[in-house]
Image 1 (cartoon, rainbow, N blue to C red):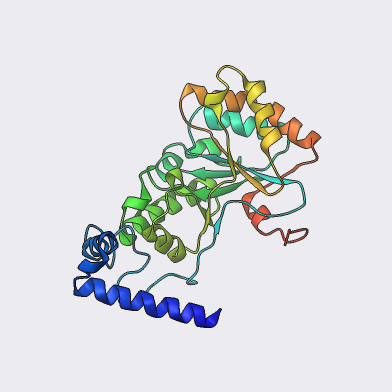
Image 2 (cartoon, one colour):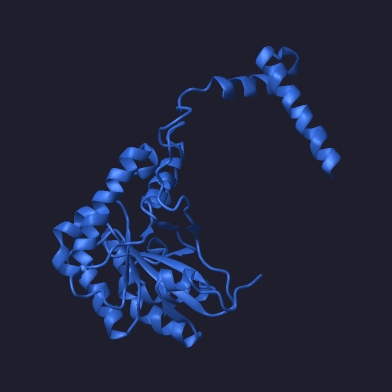
Length: 271
């Protein structure tokens, strides 16, 4: 295995050297490689794709960042998450339902909305957790590391003031990751949280019960479930079916936890 790996490595080095010298004999492969070498649309240092700031010192806090889609576990645990709020009507509706059923959730807040609608969440998040979802829901993956950091830091401060607790989690808009996002997240000592399963309201127009049954059937242990407490009218299908979803999952033996509680779970992890 080691010898084979060594031979492969030497062949690759020789092939790249030939390509750099012209490599016309390699035909299509040479053309593809040459295009890759010549592509300067993305900078070699900095820019949205790079997770470094060139050859400068990398000021990234603890120097590491974790990315989670869910947790592998045999225990029936689920983390319910809501993105894009807070917004009038929608966010209070979700908080009322969660309070009624004593369910914790994780809210990935947009900083601009948290500042504008701080009164919607202030004093109502004791059982819940907050995360950062950017300042104004722009695509962080198109920003360089400095711009992404400034956006997230501004949002961080607004969320901390509105919620009374600092976010320690980041979910980038649309789940778009880039090197600059990773760099900014590490600098802020965030864990990056995506999702295992997303609510699919468009598949069940005017049928909250049908949507709830679909989610209950699809959830597996360790799921991070994505929902929204902001959006178009169609998304209300999921929110109106939220009580049925909660009772259906509890009937299946599921326990609701925050994302951090789920990520910190070690007992019963499948190996």
